[in-house]
Image (cartoon, rainbow over all chains, first blue to last red):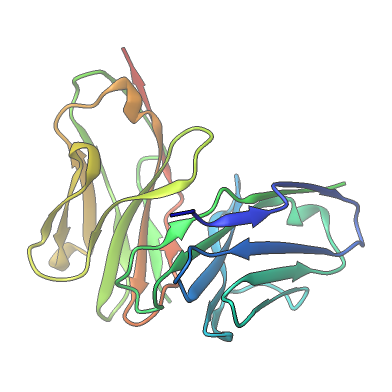
Length: 114
Length: 113
């Protein structure tokens, strides 16, 4: 069974640009969550999606947005990039957003903003 | 608001030493508790979880954790660490009916042979 896949794995952008990151959950999983990992702030929750609906959103500015498609694949978008957006962006999937199913994490997309 | 505190930021041990990593959470309702591990260059993976029932939970690779509700704690333990346990360990909490995880800041564990 294939794990959670994230594309691209590495990305370099400049300030002001926008970026789209993609996450493909494990087959059969309908819940996808996104996290930002930085050395200073640790792991911070961005979004939670289930059946194409955003169920929770973290404390991030409106430049951060996301969506989930009917096949459960998810994308997140960051517009008007800032230097502080440099981070590892992790995606996790689970069978249902009940909190009691194991979440499986992908390898992450490492975004560098110059 | 939910929060998670991990008191040990960096722990250095010799092989065969015992390990205990502290985790305290702040939340008034029913919570689900987790410990995740991130080995160098690898994905975050689940070590163990507590939802209900026996407060002493056993996970993979000989790890265990004890939920003490009165202390809002969920400390991770291992009787005898190995060099291969060198990794970063994260405590996390979620509330009922959501996958949203609130993570602690992590504890970097270094085990020397």
